[in-house]
Length: 186
Ligand SMILES: CC(C)(COP(=O)(O)OP(=O)(O)OC[C@H]1O[C@@H](n2cnc3c(N)ncnc32)[C@H](O)[C@@H]1OP(=O)(O)O)[C@@H](O)C(=O)NCCC(=O)NCCS
View 1: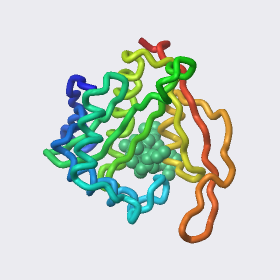
View 2: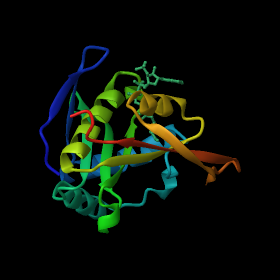
View 3: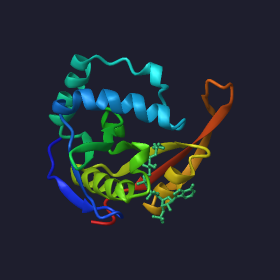
View 4: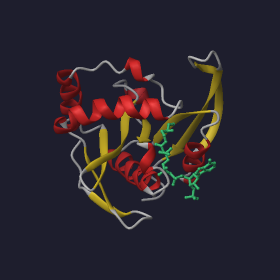
């Protein structure tokens, strides 16, 4: 969906813009998916599983930009992509239309600067204004930074999916299930 760009000042004094992602960033997003999935084991994809063509990615970003129930938020610092965050509905069935999921990932060089908390706040605000009543996410056990961020943003743990992920090194990892009710902070 379209939304206003928000500017924030980072811990190092630089300015970060949180803007609607769109098809102009298609190649940047392919590069981002490959690099971020190599920088951390805590994302779902392995780097070799990023197989989108430029045309695929443009079509996805165009569709999400024009979908009033989805948010694709790109964070840029000095014109460079720092990360992306998203809100997506759980499906078009009425019984689950109040629920959405949230995802966020930054390039490692932009961790710890305040972008994650600012993106979370803005994503939660936008999810609320769309009309969602509940936002849900999964975090891999051991991803302490993300887990701390979600708790700080008011997410509550409601369970664990055992052995949800099998890494290439043969180790299994649980997913922690978290949710937050919306509409109470506006
Ligand atoms: C997770 C992520 C979005 C967080 O964004 P960020 O801007 O780096 O967030 P911050 O550094 O402000 O960290 C959030 C909080 O966690 C705390 N934190 C950082 N490292 C921590 C650690 N190892 N253990 C516990 N808490 C930690 C920070 O102190 C901060 O809390 P504070 O503001 O009270 O100090 C970002 O690091 C990232 O993209 N990571 C890789 C991808 C990923 O894991 N995505 C989430 C998938 S579920």
